[in-house]
Length: 435
Image (cartoon, rainbow, N blue to C red):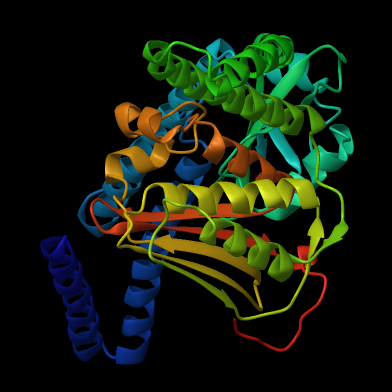
């Protein structure tokens, strides 16, 4: 490249020298310079014209055979063009692979821009969401999938969990819609048919609810007879031990049934909880008094009320949440330990926390601790009478209040369970008090 430019410069200087020499010999140096430089300009303009014509017809014509600087320019343009053709073929190939991949996917795929306007969708999206080729391109997705929950999901910008709702095409079809953000505000909508899973889940809920309901009556009868027999002084003392154990197991079964019924009730309710005015401070004070009456409990039960704000929600469900968390803390904390209960509000909303100095939970179990019937130590849970449903009830009840459960724990050092309620659930923002 540099050699060609050096040669071009030498040739230019040589032409100027010839023009000056001719002018000195024959006279009129200016005319000789003008003629030579004009010829030099015409030569390069002709090369430029041939290059321009080739660029316009490069698909059908071969590149011009130039030397020097013009040859280097033609070679550079040829390399750029070939590289462009290679990348173009590569992009076309990748796009075709992408289309084949999305066509083979069982999910519907919709590509949207930052304004949630549809840029592209695959064939399964047409079937699941009722979209139409060409007609729906450029339309906002919420104008085609008309559902208030879907619009709220899009506006929330929290796409960690998918949204399940009925298909706009068929009422007996349920879809799982999951938005994935990428690029400069662009979004990818994945739609999956989960009708079978929803039917199985509905069957499971119905079975659990019906079975629990049917078990309640016989368990009540059995417990009644066992209470009578245990309190009967005429019963052989050799039978008192087995009868006491049977009564404990019957009570445990009754607790499991009651928890199952409560969980089924929460799942069947769906949607959000009501907005009754709940005096959280008074409720927690009563719970603390009840715990203090227990024979087996930690030495210190401390209640700290940093706010007298009330909540808008279901009193029964909130009572269940607080009772389960406080009960677990008391149950798994030794007699020499301590349980701290706190209620406070801030600019984010209201918060309830229970901290204990009990056995703690290993980190490996924390992701599954709110699953129904999941126990960290099954033997210890059976010894303390736990059903394995308490935290599942807490999770469902909090979800109905738009709240979240945060768990921190270290094995052997205790646990901290915190419930975060949104600001819209706080009935009043009052001055802080302490208890």
